[in-house]
Amino acid sequence: MSKKIFITGGAGYVGAALVPKLLDLGYQVTVLDLFLFGENLLQSHNKLRTIKGDIRDQDLLEKIVPGHEIVIHLACISNDPSFELNPELGRAINLDAFEPLVKISKAKGVNRFIYASSSSVYGIKEEMDVHEGMSLEPLTDYSKFKADCEEILKKYKDDSFTVVTIRPATVCGYSTRQRMDVVVNILTNLAYHKREISVFGGGQLRPNIHISDMVNAYVALIEADKNKINGEIFNAGYENQTVLELAEIVKSVIGEDVKIKFIPSNDNRSYHISSKKINDMLGFRATHKISDAVEDLKSAFDDGRLIDPLNNEMYFNIKRMQNINLK
Image 1 (cartoon, rainbow, N blue to C red):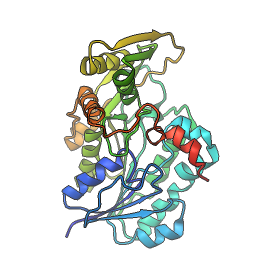
Image 2 (cartoon, rainbow, N blue to C red):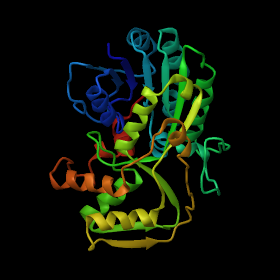
Image 3 (cartoon, one colour):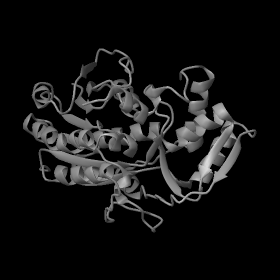
């Protein structure tokens, strides 16, 4: 019998790419999501159940979590600007709702809990290869709460409840729940539609990962032997490239007529992560290049899959959050 997987935020940017992959692999999937970015992001499937609901609703969780072996927790108010729009809401969803979800999952017989943290928990490091053993210095409440949840999760680990945290780089590429507010996608959108990219500074490193590789990283965590992952934390990234290098990759795909305009910046935040551990322990390595993500977005622009990509609030977390005024 196929394993049953419960995914919070399964209609989000990564979730909308992960769910079809898991269904193709034969898993039964339940998605809990507020569907703030559209109701039809996931195609109906006989092994998919979608529930419109809030992870803060513990009564709902008590009803729908039983019967699942694995929980993948993706739901959160994502990115710093959206979080800062309403810090109380951000705290309620990203931190306060977390421990009840873990407790309920464990009490209801879930045996594996996979948590999506963020590589932003490291803050700014001088070292070139930031690994999982390094100290965390989160710079914002968004990343601080991600780190807090990692600590909370560890407390619930035991032989019958496997807990694992993944710290992704910035995800890029095409999804049915598109985001245009992450660095590679921003640059690609501007290059394609305006034929000009503004690069602020340019020397800062930004680790990215193609959305297909991110999906494959979750599959690796689902399928890994519990003894290899219980209590572990894994970075997941591709290469550490500067913003200027990313802009050059975008230009090479979109067209040589694209101008790159340099704007001085005081933002020297530079992030660079090592993905050696997940490769060594689980055999996972990102295989999709950043240029693949740009190609995928270009195809989606070419064939009209994305509607008004420069302005559509459905592609920009902060614009959407401002307009719906979620409480």
